[in-house]
Length: 327
Image (cartoon, rainbow, N blue to C red):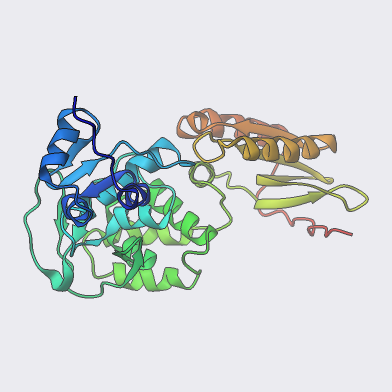
């Protein structure tokens, strides 16, 4: 049996940076020619994703499977042509913005608004002006601000706000960028739906499920009094930071924690969440409620929170005690 030719390490390194995908021209550059590629596909080591794009089977480490799928969508579009530019949701995925739909359409554009017909599941967008780009892993990608303008009209309200929250939280955009995004959206199809969502954004949200929960509670007329509030004991020792809080009076709080395996799934994060929650419970005067994403999307979250707030005679707009500082 002929000995299988080893793949060049530079190609494998490139595949790791591209969610496991490589292009035919990247293969040719390191002498992995058409014959070897056909053998790899026939033998099951590789899979053909679309014309000229191959899945090497390398899976990026440290990422949630849904994030990997989104990155694969972005790279499968970029690798169809060496001149394409990643845009919209694919560009947001490459920047690491959370809150996108579980599945996104592979999409790119060509410089100077060159028109191309979509093919094999790859959408070729046409953006003639206003395309700001940065380089990621050697390829041109729309900036976060530009990609948000492109993507927001195609997202639901919860997805749009979650993406904006996350981009703010990560420092990928600034608060004053929201006004720029609003001005640019005003000239785009679907903007009338999106513009009312912009004032709902809050960069303090630490995960999309937190953003979704806040919106559900807002819709029900029981929006939180504060987000990501720090709590301290009587001696000024830090107890923890709460996701969503309502002030019940007399130094008492309702604290809602949103737990998500998708966004807080790492063991270190789970331990951190448990530690901070135990500290908050330890004070003995706060009411702690913990919810998972399935509770957020249904009626469970709103119903449970509303029941507690009614029982505790909570009222909106009550002046909040000043946050203590560490001593």
